[in-house]
Image 1 (cartoon, rainbow over the protein chains, first blue to last red):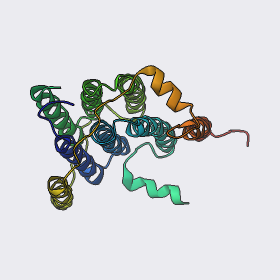
Image 2: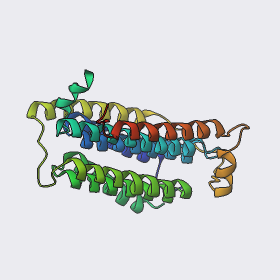
Image 3: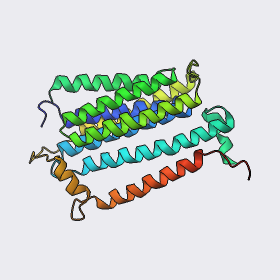
Length: 105
Length: 169
């Protein structure tokens, strides 16, 4: 057990990081920077899982494996999102969210 | 982990997170994200999750950031600055974000977390391997297999989405 550091420290850190990511998600226009904000959010959730595993349930590694699966899902999400972004760029020559309603038709 | 290490890592992560969402040079945002991921990796190592720290370092900081930087170079002009958001958009986003953060932080501070009874964290490579492929209690073989199929499907899907349309069709 790390001396002096409570679980609250980690939870507050990951809360702040999560909401910084949400702020980026709301204000950015470029698709790639929106993707970066989503990565920030997923990463903060990983810190949360690991801290809860370490402090509350150290006997079975549930949080550890959840964080590992979140990393794998993030990798697939980035691969598919970047494929979509590149094919959009080929069609529209720009990747701002305003133009993406083109995908509806 | 001592208190000093925690605060240094936390400050590092928070500063680079803010820079990630506010910087107007697109390549720099990716590099700032890389530093955030490195800081998180430091936390994993400090909490004795060595395998998870290594996975974070190779998959996230190594793989994902490189893919993102590649796609930035393919799709964006690096000299351009990103368009800044409007004042009202920034204002309302900040309002929503501070409200959400305040609710979460007040909940965390008021909740009484139970004290830890047994303090044995076994995160050796041996245990991780047995759990990951175990089908008894606390085994994770089903999500492990499902995620392998998901990775295959995502790989095929992204190849099909990103390939050039057939000219002769």
